[in-house]
Length: 414
Image (cartoon, rainbow, N blue to C red):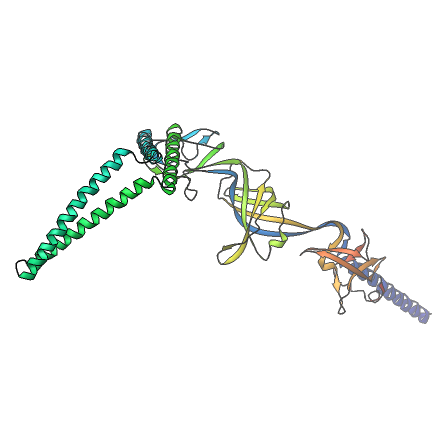
């Protein structure tokens, strides 16, 4: 009897151990399955981002210069002032402009008189006057020649010094030169006005007419006006200074429309192929305690490179689509340019795709309570996601790591 009781107790113990073994095995399998992280194939945008730092600049600004030269009498706008298009910003000193106008009138009158004289040609009085001068010069030449002859004979006889002889020679040469010059002048008068002289005189008249017109315009427009509406963000001159003609290297004032802002950013030449006009962008601007992210769009990409700190860059402009009133020119901005490689394609996290030694790519596809190796073809990718071109369907679940269950690992499907 006791023998049967012992056998029964032993059987119960064995059954209990066997039940416990299978129970714990099943629980362990469930635990292992729960520890395997899963992810579903979802449609996503495959996006590549480029992050650079730039500075704010008004989309529309005017560098104001003067069309005329003059001294500043009054400046009517200061930095920070709002001005409207056509507003007078600077007045020039009119007294100096009046003097310039009078000189221009006098110069034009003299040029016209000279032209008229050349057109009229030589008159009889002028010819007679030159002939009279020539007769007098010839008389002086004859006297100088006679004096030189006498001094030469005296010098040979010992009655004159060498200095006296040299003086007589010089007087003769001077008289000869005078005769030749007057004779040449008479010849020119007889020939009349040359075409070359007439052309030069006409050109001089035109030049003086343009100078007079400029002086008149300066006097009538002795002011500098704003060509646009906006805020004066820079003033480079003071009252009393003399300003010149259109020097863009140093504008008098800069007026900008701060309602429309953009970011100017230098893109390295190795990244410029990733940037195109029309791309979306995020613009982060932080001026403690304010920090805000704005939407933007690439509005301009330079076609020519520029050298900045020994590297070739392409200046790119990113327009801010929703600017705030507190933005100011030259603030630092962090720009993230978005490049959509693919839109709305089946994707997985990059860590869910494994690569075999032969180069093929696979995932561990969830099948029932286990996994199978599934070969896949991939497309575009970034640092986070990869496009699934073939091998999986939207909604399929795959493991983010190699499952510990080896029983299904070797089953491969395509």
